Length: 170
Image (cartoon, rainbow, N blue to C red; front, side):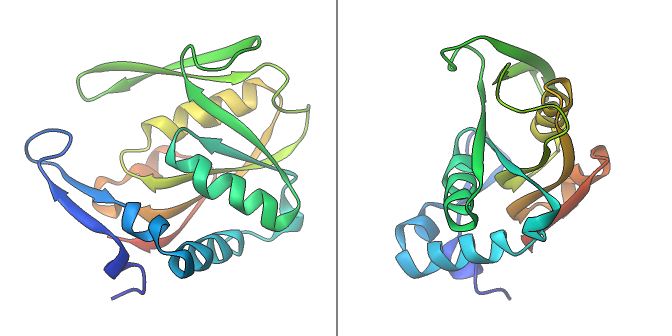
């Protein structure tokens, strides 16, 4: 058992029947748990191995921006289509039923900038695979991705070609 477990709430049948949603809100509501999670996620990769953090909407923003603040690094945002105000690049990806699109600002990364992608949870890997594609399209070099939680039984890491690290794997 991990120190994280008491701070994660399982919500059955959300967002649809048969899914057990891992709710991180109890963790982020607890100041000590949030600080520990950010500190430990910031230590998953050597900070000298990357230049910028890329955070995925929306819960990735919580950890990515806090890690950036802690490490003195900037944070580039990847958002759902239509949410970024300036010129963007987009990547569409498949969902279980349908598709989704994520975007990054065209000037969100500099050519050759080394990045890690941050999100709260890695499930099937579709969103981070799209985020990786966008980072590369923007000129970034994806060093790896960091998560609070990985749902290992969904094998999302197998879709990714960069290092995957998580504080807790279920």
